Image (cartoon, rainbow, N blue to C red; front, top):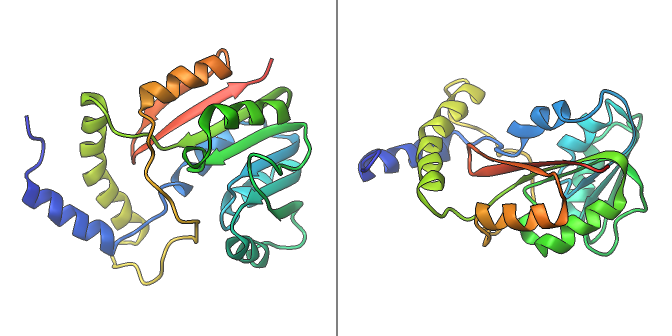
Length: 218
């Protein structure tokens, strides 16, 4: 059964283009609620222009923010007060992560760029006992549930864009992020591999074409 006609979908897509907003930043506060109020060291992998890293600095004694793009890293440093305990590093997430352990590791819209299982195991090695890993990821739509959530996200996306831009057409782009590519793993595949690498992990499909993963190291 068709939920919305192609004409309605095209109209919503045009509206979304005129009222963009940051889908990843939408989950930042949710990520913080998964973490303790006070933590020692935190690692943000794929930190982009540093929005989440700066939020983590409000509860961590030190934050390491890793990004592979030098231009974006330069922007992040310029946007960050020198008083905040955040260090931005240009590094490869698989081979050059700053030494842990970390009480918290976050990764938003990045893990689908990496060898998935290897990335999870790398994060696991850098996580301190009792530490928390929180990932917001992208997966390839496959099956009725994914397509239903995708259809529901289109009007919800338009509503959020209107609210965040106060009904006006956006005059500037959302926060600078690295170029993205489409996810090639389905949510079922993501779940299967995550459970093998991180026993006890919790995953959930989310709106706005995302899923969440939370794991606490024993």
